[in-house]
Image (cartoon, rainbow, N blue to C red; front, side, top):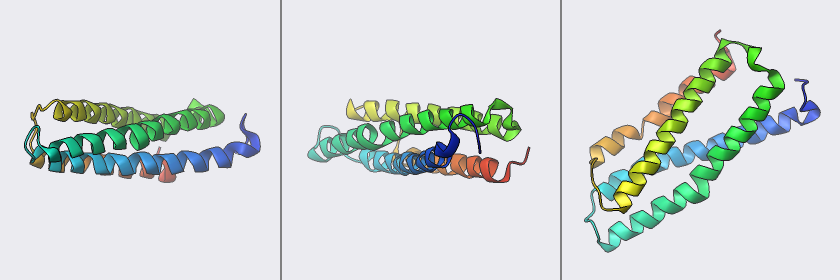
Length: 147
């Protein structure tokens, strides 16, 4: 695909996919961490361990992977143009919503760290499935390009 990226297009695309995988791996792990964290006693040693694990996962893997995914994705969109088809617009909408879910998880992490238990472990186990639904739809849009 020729565009302003030229021969670098496939490299940018490859690294975009790699960082999407990192982002999704973290997005699958964090709600599971929350489920376990929600079951422990506030202020306990176990609580402190979960707070640290969640913070590291978010700051070392999930946030950087999302940022790099977005930067590389924007480069790819600019390379092919916004007129690539409806599939691209649908994909971008889903990625925006998934990024909002990322933000909600950041809020839940901060609540749990502050000892606020608004959600129970069953809720977080259900939320563990949300990234899977989005990634299925996004991959279908990108590969099949149904419209």
